[in-house]
Length: 261
View (tube, rainbow, N blue to C red):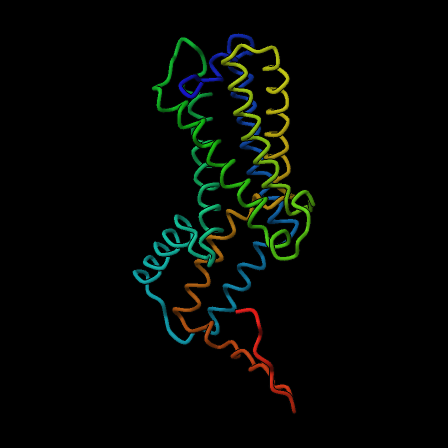
């Protein structure tokens, strides 16, 4: 199963141009959905207005070399290692999901466009990475969904409680899970393969088609916001913010030591 290209087997019954067209439509959904999100929510206007405001408050000039260094730090810390997460468990779950998603998307494009049929077999590592990417998404995503989410862990709510903010992670998990099931059924030549192919395509369509309403586009905003924060710390504009107020003491009352350590 892991060494098989599920798309080359599919090409025996589905035109290659149709498979490639579906992938191109998904890419168009991401681009169009992100642009719509920027326009509808005004994220771009807010970002650049905040950038100009921070520039006016700056107490020192940041040179090109320093700005480039800050950009590299942003890519390494917030981008490649998700350093913004204080919790090690949350960071690991995020990294598994993120790198799994990247591998999953890149290998899907390779398998569909470079090795679409049995006449052009891919190196065995490519379909293996496709399956590994889907597995990483499932490990990181399900770990986050059932054991790390704040409202589930801290507030004792049901893990099956779904909100609009959950669209991205749930549709991503559905796409990766159904992709693995479809690949396994197809390699076993099961009669159920076509059903799970349809479910897989629907989940993938929902994943990329719901960009304007899910948190998908946040992956493009977060690096820019992280870089802006580093730049504000460097030019002194962030230091102009008022210091946090001290917690007021309770008059006439000395707090007791908690029995839970």
